Length: 70
Image (cartoon, rainbow, N blue to C red; front, side, top):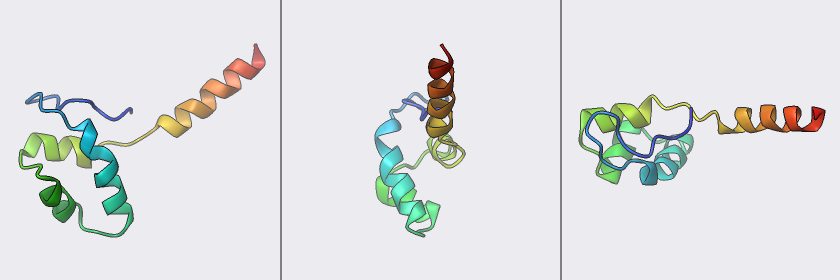
């Protein structure tokens, strides 16, 4: 899934917080603490960031393979 630009429920922009959230979680920080530091307070926005799975790398690999066949 591609990172959502806006929260599906409330419409607030959340894409600008994705990189900081991902870096914080990969650094071993608690996701709750990272979201608190970013100022994300709504449950809907928090769940959109926490449950997002970034598949852009896998999609780009498939795209490259199909282009190479043509």
